[in-house]
Image (cartoon, rainbow, N blue to C red; front, top):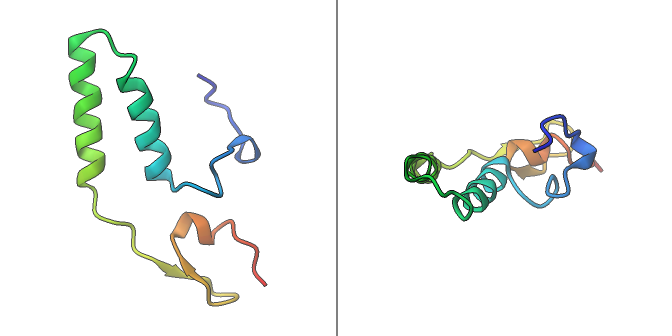
Length: 78
């Protein structure tokens, strides 16, 4: 797994939140886990992720657009 991926390398940056991307990665890992103890850890991580409170929406100080913080941080202000 490449842990030095830049923001421009992320194909999901504009379409997924960090939590959505994490959920997808855990689901992919879940399908490949063979060790029962590791399976429990992945299952627990998915449970914890699902239990997180929703991310509050924020307003862009430049244009007033409202959205998730990670999307507002990278949107094009008009």
